[in-house]
Length: 73
Image (cartoon, rainbow, N blue to C red; front, side, top):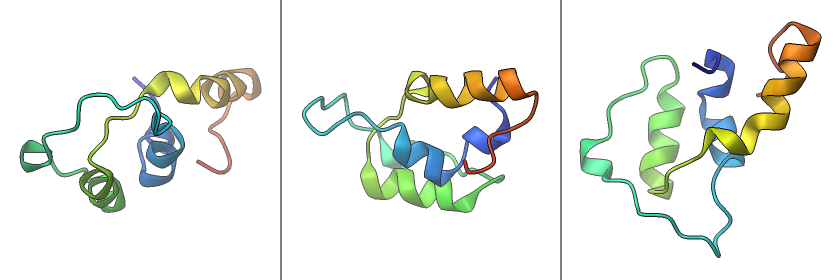
C-alpha cells in the first residue's frame, strides 16, 4: 500500500491520465470519503476520473532510495 503522502489530492491530480486517454469515469455517487484528506474526495468528485498509482512510480522509488516520504506530495 502506498504511504498516506501519496493518497492526497495533489498526488491524485498528478497521477491522472492525460486527457487524450479517457478511462472509464468514476461513479462519484458511490465514492467513499477520504478521512485522511478531505480534499482528495473533493478533487476526485470534481474530476470524475480514476488515477493510477503507476503514474507516481518515480516519486515512490525516490522515497525508497531516500528512506523517507516525498517532501512535496
